[in-house]
Structures are given as structure tokens and as C-alpha cells.
Image 1 (tube, rainbow, N blue to C red):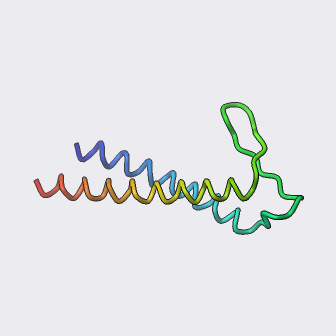
Image 2 (image 1 turned 60 degrees about the vertical axis):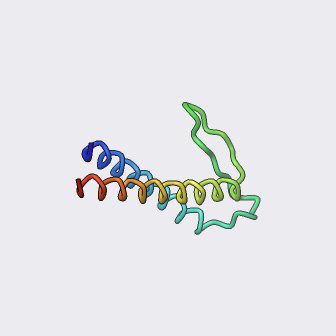
Length: 82
């Protein structure tokens, strides 16, 4: 059981690192500039996306991942106490 939770936690941490990198890139650009183009990969296709919306999505995703990591930490703690 602990191994499954640890595997999930590692996957979440990898996602967090990836999203942190994306957020850092967004912090470097001016979202209001018309020259900024952001694309999202959906399946095999790149879809143009509004930069401000994309940044907001990344921030929301980071919040969600943070909560999931905290839940995984609690589950690991509980499992180790047993």
C-alpha cells in the first residue's frame, strides 16, 4: 500500500516540477503583448491559447497538485504508523 502511494507521490512531484518550470517561463513573458503566442498540446495537435488563461490554468494545476501531494504525505504517515 505504501509503495503505491509513494509511486503516486513521485508522479505528482514530477508534474509539479514540470508545471513550476512552465510557470517560471510565463513569469518571464508579458501576457498583454500581442507578440506572445502560447500553444497547448492536445493529442497530436498544437492549439493556440490565450497567455493569461494558460498561466491561470498552470497556477490552478499547481494548487491542485500541492493538495494531492499533501494528501499523499498524510496517507504515507498514516500507513507507517500502523
